[in-house]
Image (cartoon, rainbow over all chains, first blue to last red; front, top):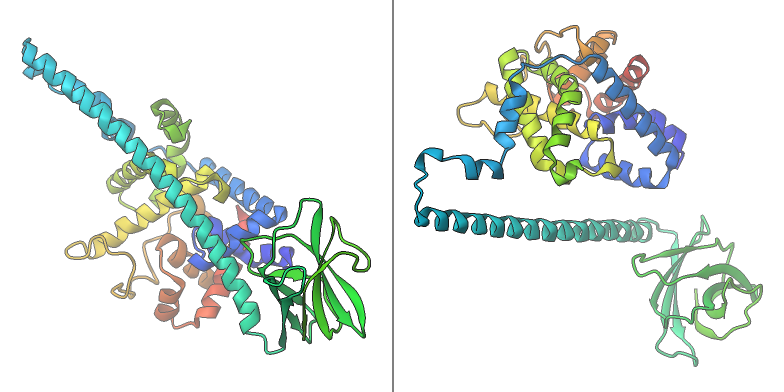
Length: 249
Length: 164
């Protein structure tokens, strides 16, 4: 993405002023976490807007503040509200004590619910983000007629292993889906190879990331087949380790 | 501190920002008395919703400004059909004839900046920002293609950016 072009499209202003659509907002927030320039542009417009608003402040009616505080004052009021009803009996003391206990219980319960809700909200956001990423990946595969697929079956070292390569014959992009591969030891990494004219061509090492459906590997100019070997961390120039899966295009 | 609902911090917030937020409320709600009521609701809402403020999505002021803007637009809207549809959000039933001229533009704050824009761009920003019409509604009301509405508003915003 061209960040400069994106910034100068008016999206920053549109987002900050609350005029962007739901979809634009989501996209903008995602890009903000990826591009510091965009974040800086947002911040600078926000500051300008804030400054402008502060310079053009108009004093509201004087009683607004006290009305607000009356409305939000919660717990303090419950105790002081009925001075007329006070009768100095034991009964009243017990009732007041019960009220305080109930109130404390209710506050605790609210707090628990609030915390629970926050956790749920976080989980929800994470899941939505995952789903979006998966949907994007599926889009890549579905909308491109030039995509060819190679199913790589497990070899002797690990017969139940299975992985899939999607290769774009025009752009030469390579996407890898690790359907089933054992988690490697911490000093090892899997490496993807294209077999082109009988020679292995390095397409890069990769980590097993559960949240990503597709891993984008290095481009491959051409390939007859693809294979994955287990190499020392960082990869090798030519395959040295055990081959786990292989499949023809 | 504010997110722990500290009243002192909230008082400080009010002292510093009520004027700026009242400015924006005033540019949408013209009646002074109603504008004060709206501002009161805005701050009560800020107090109640403070947990939902997410600093990764923008500055606190931006968040408050948007609450103020939305509350003001809701107020103006609810007046139009207060009998049966008071709480309805912008929908199909919105009447457009008055929308293009709208309330008179006062020469304060952002609205003052707005007067520097060219006629049509000014109408578009006024309708979308100060009256809360969606791009679709503006497209239908002014009979301009949706894509054009979007690009023109964006270009108006870029111009505004250089003016504030």
